[in-house]
Length: 187
Image (tube, rainbow, N blue to C red):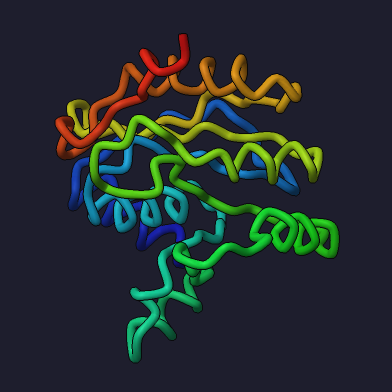
């Protein structure tokens, strides 16, 4: 029922398309980009439900106020304190090890503003947990969300991040001026 409703809203009412060539893994990190608007979250959650899959997500703790916080948690939300140094990678890896299924979507830019210095926590989580990174791209120019590439962390973070950023460079966010891969910073 949920899949049918979300599919109707995503495809028929909003006019978005899906390109899905990646299998669903029991345990995975979903790297989602470009992230330039709050709409990305809504459209992304509709997309994932429309293809019959579930995923959690991390969001800054400031969004988890009453009553919105209860709704976000029910949707798989995990509040993150971005101002405090903590072992988020280790905490997530421990959670992965204790579950049979685990899927977590992370936006590497960690902001809707232009940021050439992407966070690498998603990579470290996947590498330490020995799970794949599924690249999911949102493209407002074609109204399509694509899931057709997987990166298995090699341990060579510079090489792997370059591959990930090159892949995302072909997609346009809702506010394209707010998106950069920062590839020039990787020379």
